[in-house]
Image 1 (cartoon, rainbow, N blue to C red):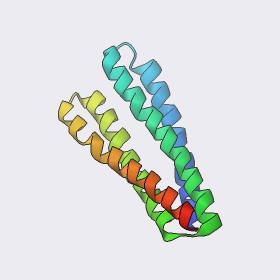
Image 2 (image 1 turned 30 degrees about the horizontal axis):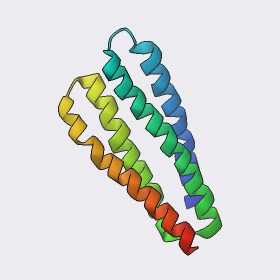
Image 3 (image 1 turned 90 degrees about the vertical axis):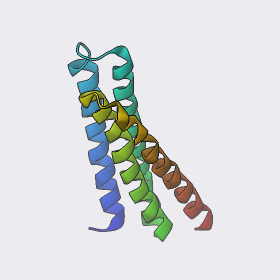
Length: 124
């Protein structure tokens, strides 16, 4: 599968999952979690949506410029999303608070993805 279509498909799937996770948090977990944990879960879903949309931008940018840095940015968004949002979901669902220490690693990957995407655009 061409790189641009791969990132577009990943973005679409991850955006859909973000809606599903957000609905699950808002409706399925409302009566079983504290307001703080619901907020944490919602943060994971919100950042997942933002970065799923970022993957659509990566697909567009890669189709336009085919810069290797754009591909790296896309994979950083995927990894960051899995680590950032995934650690927040797992923290809330398992009660393992130590997972909060993993979340910033995902955040750094997301930030690096944005930096590389911008850099690639400036260089294109």
